[in-house]
Image 1 (cartoon, each protein chain N blue to C red):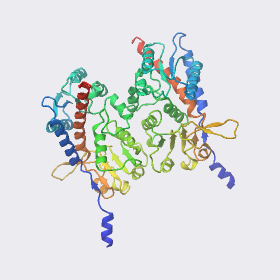
Image 2 (cartoon, rainbow over the protein chains, first blue to last red; image 1 turned 45 degrees about the vertical axis):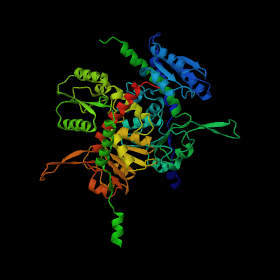
Image 3 (cartoon, chains in turn orange, purple; image 1 turned 120 degrees about the vertical axis):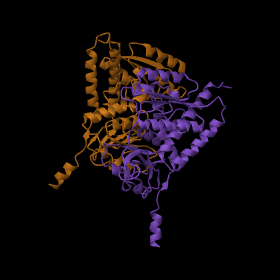
Image 4 (cartoon, rainbow over the protein chains, first blue to last red; image 1 turned 60 degrees about the vertical axis):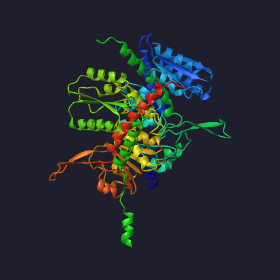
Length: 310
Length: 310
């Protein structure tokens, strides 16, 4: 009897299956794209500079995902040595090109290039990463539903919001603790949670007593890029854990010399949390699904603008 | 002996004298302006629409403050019935006018006018209130010192930062709880505190257990517009309190039929806090001082741009 009830209390967290949720979204996008005219498809330009292996991998995944969804992808691969001028000229042409509804510049850029100027040069309407100042400002001033925003929201935090919604996690009045304050994830995530009426705390490398902060959270979003930093005993029992981290750690003696882990120590955390995203297979697949979704949404907004009003 | 030591422990908070700090800043600005050529002064355009008494009072205070500092003020007072077109034409002319370095549109506007479109029509370089999307985005992406930003930061949160700095409040790693999430105060304040390496929590009307949240704070910034909401027993002993609220409450039977109070219950709070801003005389005077400061900074940036580089 006692052992049974302990077992019930100690039941493991529900695994939020980002892979399945992303697949379903991608299927839905593919159906919407298939229903469009043959000559009237969304197009995504993907710009890669240099030879970073991780960037090449991400770019290939994005192009393949486009193909699978019926979105036309236009690849631009530049040498490490490309000049700022050539890069900006390319973006200007893509801004003008009616076949292109989204422009993605794979980050990081080599250090001789001006990342801010490059991101600014993308037309805000085609900025599917949501990093142009116009879209950054729009997000700060937006309080509607994240899937109804008339501008692009950065793909990773947007994907986290979809995971929380599809997992029926109540956010209104919930205390959400975001670990990390980056422009790409932490800070926009904080804003998106606040817009859903959550109480939001942002913690980071300078935070004192970070464990005590995390222990108060109803929802933890970890986006710091430190392998398995958040342990199970940092969590309030029943907390929801969204793990944005993708860290490669060595596995000496194993067949594969490394493995991917999140910012959360998965095994100890899933014994305490009520819901948790795995790594891989959690947030990662959502980022690409949201890129396709932002490209389709951008296409749809442009179509509307070119239609003659009745 | 016992009574003496109790007294020492219960010593009251240091009062952060916003009036004196603002006066010193205004004096400094006046000296800088006086040192400029007679025909080469910063200019601020102040646009008022309608007959709200509080707006008229604020506008008059701002114009007087300009005059005292040697900043030229240009007043534009419109009837309640002014059209959006006339308002935007006026702003366009001011955008072109070399005598004008700052344009302030007193908010709120009457409901038939589009506030967003109006704020957007002000040239970002002349947007001394920091509410243009370009400046909103710039703040979200900025992590330098708040007085060195090459764009305007909203006057009230900027003033709060100056008060904290002049009162030598350490922010790095400190837990700051911001009450309120407005575009004008709460949200930019959260960003400014984060940029100073504070751990930041934003609480608001939907927050559960708001008292418990506030009780954890090393620094409390109250900007909710609810008279005396934060009580002394909500505070951690030694907390620093910045009270942005200015609320009018009735005082039946008194000579003056109302009095101004903050969002913090001052008498109980000052018995617990280590430092506290009074209302009036705390944040309020800083807002106007920062408007003058932003106008002068805007003037200085424009001067630099028109100088021939060596």
